[in-house]
Length: 451
Image (cartoon, rainbow, N blue to C red; front, side):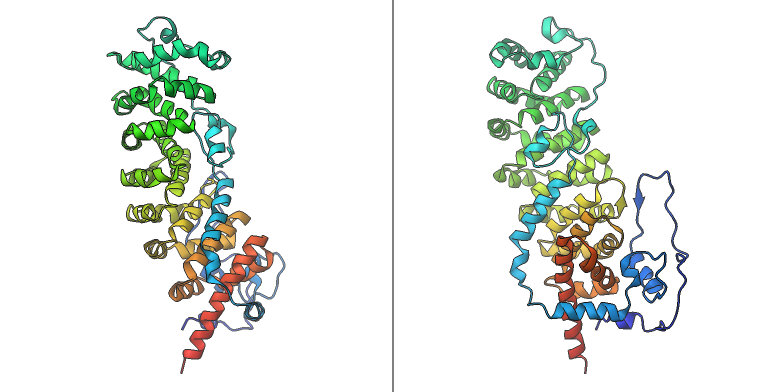
Protein backbone atom coordinates (compact mmCIF):
# COMPACT_ATOMS: atom_id res chain seq x y z
CA UNK A 1 0.00 0.00 0.00
CA UNK A 2 1.26 3.44 -0.92
CA UNK A 3 0.24 6.12 1.54
CA UNK A 4 1.21 9.76 1.74
CA UNK A 5 0.99 9.58 5.54
CA UNK A 6 3.54 6.75 5.62
CA UNK A 7 6.04 8.79 3.66
CA UNK A 8 6.00 11.43 6.40
CA UNK A 9 5.67 9.19 9.46
CA UNK A 10 9.18 10.04 10.67
CA UNK A 11 8.39 13.78 10.82
CA UNK A 12 6.73 15.25 13.88
CA UNK A 13 3.64 17.30 13.12
CA UNK A 14 4.87 19.97 15.51
CA UNK A 15 8.26 20.33 13.91
CA UNK A 16 8.98 23.81 12.55
CA UNK A 17 11.35 24.42 9.68
CA UNK A 18 12.91 27.74 8.76
CA UNK A 19 12.04 29.42 5.48
CA UNK A 20 15.57 29.21 4.13
CA UNK A 21 16.08 26.95 1.16
CA UNK A 22 17.46 23.45 1.89
CA UNK A 23 21.14 22.81 1.27
CA UNK A 24 20.56 21.13 -2.07
CA UNK A 25 19.11 24.26 -3.67
CA UNK A 26 21.50 26.16 -5.93
CA UNK A 27 20.24 29.31 -7.66
CA UNK A 28 20.80 29.27 -11.42
CA UNK A 29 23.62 31.43 -12.79
CA UNK A 30 22.30 34.73 -14.09
CA UNK A 31 24.02 34.35 -17.44
CA UNK A 32 22.65 30.90 -18.20
CA UNK A 33 20.05 30.71 -20.93
CA UNK A 34 19.25 27.06 -20.38
CA UNK A 35 18.58 25.54 -17.00
CA UNK A 36 18.16 21.80 -16.64
CA UNK A 37 16.18 20.80 -13.59
CA UNK A 38 17.44 18.00 -11.40
CA UNK A 39 14.84 15.26 -11.64
CA UNK A 40 13.59 14.02 -8.30
CA UNK A 41 13.71 17.27 -6.31
CA UNK A 42 9.96 17.13 -5.71
CA UNK A 43 9.93 14.61 -2.87
CA UNK A 44 12.80 16.31 -1.06
CA UNK A 45 11.05 19.66 -1.38
CA UNK A 46 7.85 18.29 0.10
CA UNK A 47 9.58 16.53 2.99
CA UNK A 48 11.41 19.73 3.87
CA UNK A 49 8.47 22.11 3.58
CA UNK A 50 5.17 20.26 3.93
CA UNK A 51 4.74 21.03 7.63
CA UNK A 52 5.74 24.70 7.63
CA UNK A 53 3.57 26.95 9.80
CA UNK A 54 5.15 30.30 9.00
CA UNK A 55 4.06 31.26 5.47
CA UNK A 56 5.86 34.56 5.15
CA UNK A 57 8.17 34.57 2.09
CA UNK A 58 6.92 31.08 1.34
CA UNK A 59 7.69 29.18 -1.86
CA UNK A 60 5.22 27.45 -4.14
CA UNK A 61 1.66 27.05 -2.91
CA UNK A 62 1.94 23.28 -2.54
CA UNK A 63 4.84 23.65 -0.09
CA UNK A 64 2.45 25.14 2.48
CA UNK A 65 -0.11 22.35 2.25
CA UNK A 66 -0.49 20.25 5.38
CA UNK A 67 -1.84 16.70 5.43
CA UNK A 68 -5.18 17.95 6.69
CA UNK A 69 -5.50 20.41 3.80
CA UNK A 70 -4.62 17.71 1.28
CA UNK A 71 -7.09 15.25 2.80
CA UNK A 72 -9.80 17.90 2.93
CA UNK A 73 -9.32 18.62 -0.76
CA UNK A 74 -9.38 14.91 -1.62
CA UNK A 75 -12.59 14.52 0.39
CA UNK A 76 -14.14 17.36 -1.60
CA UNK A 77 -13.22 15.64 -4.85
CA UNK A 78 -14.68 12.36 -3.62
CA UNK A 79 -18.13 13.97 -3.61
CA UNK A 80 -17.95 14.59 -7.35
CA UNK A 81 -19.51 12.14 -9.86
CA UNK A 82 -17.36 9.19 -11.00
CA UNK A 83 -14.93 9.88 -13.83
CA UNK A 84 -15.79 8.52 -17.27
CA UNK A 85 -12.59 7.05 -18.66
CA UNK A 86 -13.93 7.15 -22.21
CA UNK A 87 -13.68 10.92 -22.12
CA UNK A 88 -9.87 10.78 -22.25
CA UNK A 89 -9.49 9.33 -25.72
CA UNK A 90 -10.07 11.18 -28.97
CA UNK A 91 -11.30 14.43 -27.42
CA UNK A 92 -8.23 14.78 -25.20
CA UNK A 93 -5.77 14.18 -28.02
CA UNK A 94 -7.64 16.60 -30.29
CA UNK A 95 -7.41 19.16 -27.51
CA UNK A 96 -3.70 18.64 -26.98
CA UNK A 97 -3.11 18.74 -30.74
CA UNK A 98 -4.56 22.24 -30.94
CA UNK A 99 -2.56 23.33 -27.89
CA UNK A 100 0.65 21.93 -29.38
CA UNK A 101 0.11 24.09 -32.43
CA UNK A 102 0.02 27.19 -30.25
CA UNK A 103 3.45 26.44 -28.82
CA UNK A 104 5.49 25.32 -31.81
CA UNK A 105 8.15 27.35 -33.54
CA UNK A 106 8.83 26.27 -37.08
CA UNK A 107 11.69 27.57 -39.17
CA UNK A 108 12.16 27.11 -42.89
CA UNK A 109 12.88 28.97 -46.07
CA UNK A 110 9.38 30.19 -46.73
CA UNK A 111 8.72 33.20 -44.52
CA UNK A 112 6.34 31.44 -42.19
CA UNK A 113 3.89 30.01 -44.74
CA UNK A 114 4.45 26.41 -43.72
CA UNK A 115 3.80 27.39 -40.12
CA UNK A 116 0.37 28.63 -41.18
CA UNK A 117 -0.41 25.47 -43.13
CA UNK A 118 0.67 23.29 -40.20
CA UNK A 119 -1.26 25.51 -37.74
CA UNK A 120 2.01 26.55 -36.14
CA UNK A 121 2.61 30.29 -35.59
CA UNK A 122 6.10 31.60 -36.15
CA UNK A 123 7.23 32.98 -32.78
CA UNK A 124 10.53 34.36 -34.05
CA UNK A 125 10.41 36.38 -37.27
CA UNK A 126 14.17 36.09 -37.62
CA UNK A 127 13.86 32.33 -38.03
CA UNK A 128 11.84 32.54 -41.22
CA UNK A 129 14.82 33.16 -43.48
CA UNK A 130 17.92 31.03 -43.84
CA UNK A 131 21.18 32.95 -44.07
CA UNK A 132 23.10 31.86 -47.12
CA UNK A 133 26.85 32.11 -47.77
CA UNK A 134 28.00 34.20 -50.70
CA UNK A 135 27.43 32.16 -53.90
CA UNK A 136 30.38 31.14 -56.04
CA UNK A 137 30.67 32.58 -59.56
CA UNK A 138 28.67 30.35 -61.89
CA UNK A 139 29.94 29.21 -65.29
CA UNK A 140 26.64 30.11 -66.97
CA UNK A 141 25.31 32.98 -69.02
CA UNK A 142 22.36 35.26 -68.43
CA UNK A 143 20.02 34.55 -65.57
CA UNK A 144 21.94 31.67 -63.99
CA UNK A 145 25.18 33.68 -64.00
CA UNK A 146 23.87 36.38 -61.68
CA UNK A 147 25.64 36.49 -58.34
CA UNK A 148 22.77 38.40 -56.72
CA UNK A 149 19.14 37.49 -57.00
CA UNK A 150 16.29 39.88 -56.22
CA UNK A 151 13.29 37.85 -55.10
CA UNK A 152 11.31 41.09 -54.85
CA UNK A 153 11.72 41.76 -58.57
CA UNK A 154 10.99 38.17 -59.52
CA UNK A 155 7.87 38.07 -57.36
CA UNK A 156 6.46 41.06 -59.24
CA UNK A 157 6.56 39.12 -62.53
CA UNK A 158 3.48 37.16 -63.55
CA UNK A 159 3.92 33.37 -63.78
CA UNK A 160 3.30 33.26 -67.54
CA UNK A 161 6.20 35.67 -68.02
CA UNK A 162 8.41 33.48 -65.83
CA UNK A 163 7.90 30.36 -67.93
CA UNK A 164 11.11 30.80 -69.99
CA UNK A 165 13.11 31.41 -66.82
CA UNK A 166 11.66 28.35 -65.09
CA UNK A 167 12.30 26.21 -68.18
CA UNK A 168 15.93 27.38 -68.24
CA UNK A 169 16.35 26.41 -64.59
CA UNK A 170 14.69 23.00 -65.01
CA UNK A 171 16.79 22.21 -68.10
CA UNK A 172 19.94 23.30 -66.25
CA UNK A 173 19.26 20.75 -63.50
CA UNK A 174 20.36 18.13 -66.06
CA UNK A 175 23.72 19.85 -66.70
CA UNK A 176 26.94 17.85 -66.13
CA UNK A 177 28.31 20.86 -64.21
CA UNK A 178 27.66 20.81 -60.45
CA UNK A 179 27.91 24.60 -60.35
CA UNK A 180 25.18 24.96 -62.99
CA UNK A 181 22.90 22.49 -61.18
CA UNK A 182 23.54 24.27 -57.89
CA UNK A 183 22.67 27.65 -59.44
CA UNK A 184 19.50 26.29 -61.05
CA UNK A 185 18.32 24.69 -57.79
CA UNK A 186 18.99 27.92 -55.90
CA UNK A 187 16.97 29.99 -58.36
CA UNK A 188 14.05 27.54 -58.22
CA UNK A 189 14.27 27.61 -54.43
CA UNK A 190 13.78 31.36 -54.30
CA UNK A 191 11.18 31.45 -57.05
CA UNK A 192 9.08 28.99 -55.00
CA UNK A 193 9.70 30.75 -51.71
CA UNK A 194 6.60 32.91 -51.33
CA UNK A 195 4.24 32.72 -54.32
CA UNK A 196 1.76 29.87 -54.67
CA UNK A 197 1.33 30.45 -58.43
CA UNK A 198 5.11 30.13 -58.91
CA UNK A 199 5.06 26.82 -57.05
CA UNK A 200 2.32 25.55 -59.32
CA UNK A 201 4.21 26.67 -62.44
CA UNK A 202 7.50 25.09 -61.30
CA UNK A 203 5.76 21.84 -60.36
CA UNK A 204 4.02 21.65 -63.75
CA UNK A 205 7.34 22.33 -65.52
CA UNK A 206 8.89 19.05 -64.40
CA UNK A 207 11.21 20.46 -61.75
CA UNK A 208 10.37 17.93 -59.04
CA UNK A 209 11.79 14.75 -60.63
CA UNK A 210 14.77 16.81 -61.86
CA UNK A 211 15.53 18.04 -58.32
CA UNK A 212 15.42 14.59 -56.69
CA UNK A 213 18.87 13.36 -57.83
CA UNK A 214 20.42 16.47 -56.28
CA UNK A 215 19.25 15.33 -52.84
CA UNK A 216 22.01 12.72 -53.03
CA UNK A 217 24.59 15.12 -54.46
CA UNK A 218 27.96 15.11 -52.70
CA UNK A 219 28.13 18.92 -52.89
CA UNK A 220 26.53 20.17 -49.63
CA UNK A 221 25.29 23.50 -51.02
CA UNK A 222 23.67 21.86 -54.04
CA UNK A 223 21.94 19.38 -51.75
CA UNK A 224 20.78 22.20 -49.47
CA UNK A 225 19.30 24.24 -52.33
CA UNK A 226 17.55 21.17 -53.74
CA UNK A 227 15.98 20.06 -50.45
CA UNK A 228 14.82 23.58 -49.67
CA UNK A 229 13.36 24.00 -53.17
CA UNK A 230 11.37 20.80 -52.66
CA UNK A 231 10.22 22.02 -49.25
CA UNK A 232 8.93 25.24 -50.77
CA UNK A 233 7.28 23.43 -53.69
CA UNK A 234 5.55 21.02 -51.28
CA UNK A 235 3.44 23.89 -49.95
CA UNK A 236 1.36 23.69 -53.13
CA UNK A 237 -1.05 20.83 -52.46
CA UNK A 238 -0.87 19.13 -55.91
CA UNK A 239 2.92 19.17 -55.67
CA UNK A 240 2.78 16.97 -52.55
CA UNK A 241 1.43 14.13 -54.69
CA UNK A 242 4.07 14.74 -57.37
CA UNK A 243 6.81 14.68 -54.74
CA UNK A 244 5.68 11.47 -53.06
CA UNK A 245 4.95 9.71 -56.37
CA UNK A 246 8.46 10.60 -57.56
CA UNK A 247 9.95 8.65 -54.65
CA UNK A 248 11.20 11.69 -52.75
CA UNK A 249 10.52 10.37 -49.25
CA UNK A 250 13.58 8.10 -49.14
CA UNK A 251 15.76 10.85 -50.61
CA UNK A 252 14.53 13.35 -48.01
CA UNK A 253 15.40 10.82 -45.30
CA UNK A 254 18.86 10.48 -46.85
CA UNK A 255 19.32 14.24 -46.47
CA UNK A 256 18.03 13.99 -42.90
CA UNK A 257 20.83 11.52 -42.20
CA UNK A 258 23.72 13.03 -44.18
CA UNK A 259 23.09 16.72 -44.85
CA UNK A 260 24.32 19.92 -43.27
CA UNK A 261 22.46 21.20 -40.22
CA UNK A 262 20.29 23.44 -42.42
CA UNK A 263 19.66 20.63 -44.91
CA UNK A 264 18.60 18.27 -42.12
CA UNK A 265 16.24 20.87 -40.71
CA UNK A 266 14.64 21.56 -44.08
CA UNK A 267 14.40 17.83 -44.83
CA UNK A 268 12.49 17.42 -41.55
CA UNK A 269 10.25 20.32 -42.57
CA UNK A 270 9.70 18.75 -45.97
CA UNK A 271 8.64 15.48 -44.36
CA UNK A 272 6.30 17.42 -42.08
CA UNK A 273 4.73 19.12 -45.10
CA UNK A 274 4.14 15.74 -46.74
CA UNK A 275 2.83 14.31 -43.44
CA UNK A 276 -0.01 16.82 -43.49
CA UNK A 277 -1.61 14.29 -45.87
CA UNK A 278 -2.65 11.43 -43.60
CA UNK A 279 -1.87 8.61 -46.01
CA UNK A 280 1.76 9.75 -46.21
CA UNK A 281 2.40 9.31 -42.47
CA UNK A 282 2.72 5.53 -42.62
CA UNK A 283 4.90 5.70 -45.73
CA UNK A 284 7.27 8.19 -44.12
CA UNK A 285 7.55 6.03 -41.00
CA UNK A 286 8.00 2.83 -43.02
CA UNK A 287 10.82 4.41 -45.06
CA UNK A 288 12.85 4.96 -41.89
CA UNK A 289 12.29 8.61 -40.99
CA UNK A 290 11.74 8.14 -37.25
CA UNK A 291 15.29 7.18 -36.21
CA UNK A 292 17.05 10.14 -37.93
CA UNK A 293 14.40 12.48 -36.52
CA UNK A 294 15.26 11.17 -33.05
CA UNK A 295 18.95 11.74 -33.85
CA UNK A 296 18.14 15.34 -34.84
CA UNK A 297 16.21 15.68 -31.59
CA UNK A 298 19.31 14.61 -29.66
CA UNK A 299 22.10 16.29 -31.64
CA UNK A 300 20.46 19.18 -33.48
CA UNK A 301 20.44 22.88 -32.75
CA UNK A 302 17.42 24.41 -31.02
CA UNK A 303 15.80 24.96 -34.40
CA UNK A 304 16.60 21.40 -35.47
CA UNK A 305 15.11 20.01 -32.26
CA UNK A 306 11.93 22.05 -32.78
CA UNK A 307 11.62 20.79 -36.35
CA UNK A 308 12.19 17.21 -35.17
CA UNK A 309 9.59 17.57 -32.39
CA UNK A 310 6.98 19.00 -34.75
CA UNK A 311 7.53 16.31 -37.38
CA UNK A 312 7.55 13.51 -34.80
CA UNK A 313 4.29 14.79 -33.36
CA UNK A 314 2.60 14.78 -36.76
CA UNK A 315 3.92 11.31 -37.61
CA UNK A 316 3.02 9.86 -34.21
CA UNK A 317 -0.66 10.43 -34.68
CA UNK A 318 -0.37 6.96 -36.28
CA UNK A 319 -0.03 4.07 -33.82
CA UNK A 320 2.67 2.23 -35.78
CA UNK A 321 4.83 5.36 -35.82
CA UNK A 322 4.39 5.68 -32.06
CA UNK A 323 5.85 2.20 -31.72
CA UNK A 324 8.69 3.12 -34.07
CA UNK A 325 9.46 6.25 -32.06
CA UNK A 326 9.63 4.35 -28.77
CA UNK A 327 11.81 1.64 -30.35
CA UNK A 328 14.11 4.33 -31.79
CA UNK A 329 14.77 5.69 -28.29
CA UNK A 330 12.71 8.87 -28.51
CA UNK A 331 11.47 8.79 -24.92
CA UNK A 332 14.79 9.41 -23.16
CA UNK A 333 15.61 12.69 -24.97
CA UNK A 334 11.97 13.79 -24.67
CA UNK A 335 12.06 13.33 -20.89
CA UNK A 336 15.35 15.23 -20.82
CA UNK A 337 13.82 18.15 -22.74
CA UNK A 338 10.90 18.28 -20.28
CA UNK A 339 13.41 19.37 -17.66
CA UNK A 340 14.95 22.17 -19.75
CA UNK A 341 14.01 25.78 -19.17
CA UNK A 342 14.64 28.72 -21.46
CA UNK A 343 14.68 26.85 -24.78
CA UNK A 344 10.97 26.69 -25.62
CA UNK A 345 11.28 22.93 -26.08
CA UNK A 346 9.81 21.59 -22.83
CA UNK A 347 6.14 22.07 -23.75
CA UNK A 348 6.62 20.52 -27.19
CA UNK A 349 8.42 17.53 -25.71
CA UNK A 350 5.57 16.97 -23.25
CA UNK A 351 3.02 16.97 -26.04
CA UNK A 352 4.96 14.31 -27.95
CA UNK A 353 5.20 12.30 -24.72
CA UNK A 354 1.42 12.63 -24.31
CA UNK A 355 1.03 11.19 -27.79
CA UNK A 356 3.26 8.24 -26.89
CA UNK A 357 1.14 7.44 -23.82
CA UNK A 358 -1.43 6.19 -26.31
CA UNK A 359 0.40 2.85 -26.49
CA UNK A 360 1.44 0.54 -23.65
CA UNK A 361 5.12 0.39 -24.63
CA UNK A 362 5.17 4.19 -24.66
CA UNK A 363 3.82 4.38 -21.12
CA UNK A 364 6.31 1.79 -19.91
CA UNK A 365 9.23 3.63 -21.50
CA UNK A 366 8.17 6.99 -20.06
CA UNK A 367 8.01 5.53 -16.56
CA UNK A 368 11.32 3.70 -17.02
CA UNK A 369 13.11 6.88 -18.15
CA UNK A 370 11.95 8.86 -15.11
CA UNK A 371 9.10 10.65 -16.83
CA UNK A 372 6.82 10.77 -13.79
CA UNK A 373 9.42 12.59 -11.68
CA UNK A 374 10.13 15.02 -14.51
CA UNK A 375 6.44 15.81 -14.97
CA UNK A 376 5.96 16.38 -11.24
CA UNK A 377 8.82 18.88 -11.43
CA UNK A 378 6.94 20.77 -14.14
CA UNK A 379 3.74 20.86 -12.07
CA UNK A 380 5.78 22.34 -9.23
CA UNK A 381 7.90 24.85 -11.11
CA UNK A 382 6.71 25.09 -14.73
CA UNK A 383 4.76 27.69 -16.65
CA UNK A 384 0.96 27.63 -16.68
CA UNK A 385 0.92 26.02 -20.11
CA UNK A 386 3.65 23.58 -19.09
CA UNK A 387 1.59 22.52 -16.08
CA UNK A 388 -1.37 21.84 -18.36
CA UNK A 389 0.77 19.59 -20.54
CA UNK A 390 2.32 17.85 -17.54
CA UNK A 391 -0.95 17.04 -15.79
CA UNK A 392 -2.42 15.87 -19.12
CA UNK A 393 0.47 13.44 -19.60
CA UNK A 394 0.32 12.19 -16.00
CA UNK A 395 -3.42 11.65 -16.34
CA UNK A 396 -2.87 9.51 -19.44
CA UNK A 397 -0.22 7.51 -17.58
CA UNK A 398 -2.42 6.90 -14.54
CA UNK A 399 -5.94 6.37 -15.92
CA UNK A 400 -5.52 2.61 -16.30
CA UNK A 401 -2.43 1.94 -14.18
CA UNK A 402 -2.61 1.54 -10.40
CA UNK A 403 1.15 1.05 -10.38
CA UNK A 404 1.75 4.41 -12.03
CA UNK A 405 -0.58 6.07 -9.53
CA UNK A 406 1.53 4.63 -6.73
CA UNK A 407 4.72 5.89 -8.37
CA UNK A 408 3.17 9.34 -8.73
CA UNK A 409 2.26 9.40 -5.03
CA UNK A 410 5.78 8.31 -4.08
CA UNK A 411 7.21 11.11 -6.20
CA UNK A 412 5.28 13.59 -4.04
CA UNK A 413 2.69 14.31 -6.67
CA UNK A 414 -0.37 14.85 -4.46
CA UNK A 415 0.46 18.22 -2.83
CA UNK A 416 1.39 20.02 -6.08
CA UNK A 417 -1.66 18.49 -7.78
CA UNK A 418 -3.88 19.77 -4.97
CA UNK A 419 -2.32 23.21 -5.38
CA UNK A 420 -2.85 23.05 -9.14
CA UNK A 421 -6.49 22.08 -8.67
CA UNK A 422 -6.94 25.30 -6.69
CA UNK A 423 -4.69 27.83 -8.45
CA UNK A 424 -4.08 26.57 -12.00
CA UNK A 425 -5.75 27.51 -15.25
CA UNK A 426 -9.27 26.20 -15.82
CA UNK A 427 -7.96 23.37 -17.99
CA UNK A 428 -5.22 22.46 -15.50
CA UNK A 429 -7.67 22.53 -12.57
CA UNK A 430 -10.00 20.11 -14.32
CA UNK A 431 -7.20 17.67 -15.20
CA UNK A 432 -5.69 17.91 -11.70
CA UNK A 433 -9.04 17.24 -10.04
CA UNK A 434 -9.61 14.22 -12.26
CA UNK A 435 -6.15 12.82 -11.54
CA UNK A 436 -6.56 13.40 -7.79
CA UNK A 437 -9.82 11.46 -7.91
CA UNK A 438 -7.96 8.46 -9.33
CA UNK A 439 -5.24 8.78 -6.70
CA UNK A 440 -7.81 8.93 -3.92
CA UNK A 441 -9.55 5.83 -5.27
CA UNK A 442 -6.24 3.96 -5.18
CA UNK A 443 -5.62 4.99 -1.57
CA UNK A 444 -9.09 3.86 -0.57
CA UNK A 445 -8.69 0.52 -2.34
CA UNK A 446 -5.33 -0.03 -0.68
CA UNK A 447 -6.66 0.81 2.79
CA UNK A 448 -9.71 -1.48 2.47
CA UNK A 449 -7.57 -4.37 1.26
CA UNK A 450 -5.28 -4.14 4.31
CA UNK A 451 -6.19 -6.86 6.89
